[in-house]
Amino acid sequence: RPSGTSAAAAAAAPVRVGGNIRAPRKLHDVRPVYPASMRDAGREGVVPLEAIIGRDGTVTSVRVVSAQVHPDFAAAAMDAVREWRFAPTLLNGEPVEVVMTVSVSFKLSD
Image (cartoon, rainbow, N blue to C red; front, side, top):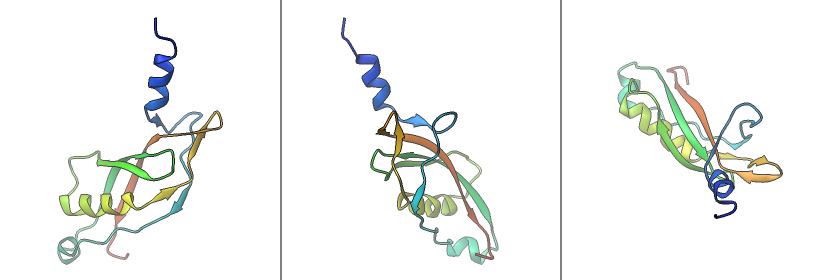
């Protein structure tokens, strides 16, 4: 019987933010570039994203979680979020990968 296999697998999987797992603190924020096509059309929007934050605080994966988002907004939001940097999230004193949901807003007043 292999010992520690399930513990190793659990440690390798990203932990969802919530409960005892706090959202990581953002150290570096990048605002998205407002897509010209959307600005010219007078369109605003919010892009809900799921991001995986690595043990080193970098965004290792990001995806749109709504099919109702215009592709131009989605691409701009994902490009910005990939540049964000966070303080590593600690679990029992060790850095862990976390999964979190973020929203990027596009408002014409920006």
